[in-house]
Image (cartoon, rainbow over all chains, first blue to last red; front, top):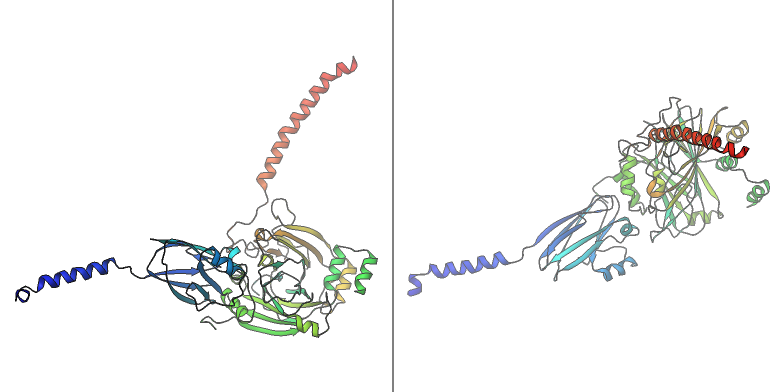
Length: 135
Length: 354
């Protein structure tokens, strides 16, 4: 009866809890990286850790490119790699000529990563970007 | 056709590259991104509004395939196998070799459409395609036909397509060359006939796929009715770093007769001016083309040279200010030195007479 008489305080409390939870929850983000004349734009960005980040990779060039993101050992392995293409790992993406590709990654920890195109000659040409993951 | 003539030199870009064929005008890019630098030789003759462009693709062994992309100033009306000695004869004219050495040599799927194919032909082991399209369209065509274009290609293709959307793609099948019995060093000359009203020679394309500090070397022969005006002015102090005016003179009768006797060279006039420009530049500095005014007005186009409107730098000017400074220095310093010299002589004279 007591509850029946005053049902709204409990509902309000529940709503507050839900609202607070939603407000604090990490929200997915979408960022766009354009590739033009074999250069990443922007060449650097910052994203939060623990949040799904969808990268929209827009290749405006008539040649293929790659977007591989990771730490130095990861890139070192790819510099001498022989993969013809990448399409199964979210951090390793081939972006065909004049096409747009999306990939979603959640970075667990803060840190600094590089995104690089490892096609022959592309890294030395300047196809390097820096991603900062904040806590 | 809307302008320049001379076609190009060219190229580079390429495919696979297990092969090691040499391209007459450009470098090759291997699977590891390495570029093999080659000295290139190109001939561009201009007479009666027609450009005759001759270059050669040389078989250097290996297998597989490679290709090149060459911007052209207009749509060719004909692409045929060139004569066998035009390039060699020109080299001999400007760089004579001793007779013994010469005899020894004698014994030896996208939304964007691909570019429009205007002409296809096969010359020996070369598959040649003349394309019309913007940079993206030509690049896409090349990509879809097995060319592995280097990372600087998108910007370079736009650079040329904005001025003349005509390109020649040449795919060289080294396996086919070997099957044909071509020996190492055998060249396949290609002769393009291009109606156009003014000439230019693409030079910047020679740096395609090369690091900024890598050396680009090329010899460009021009045969025109009269002495041409060039931009940049090859050999002019402070105006054309990387370009050397190696030869500029009226072509002699013997040379013209020899050239005329080669296949497809009957157009060579009775009188002409022979110019040889040597390109010796770091790729990063080679950000221009060679504009040529063969009309006699002496005003080669800054657009044809790549300085405007697409270039991001003004056309080089004759360093008048520098000349004035030098003149001013000479005007002031020389009289002062002479004056001091005279004064010293006057002071010394008594001593000498003592």
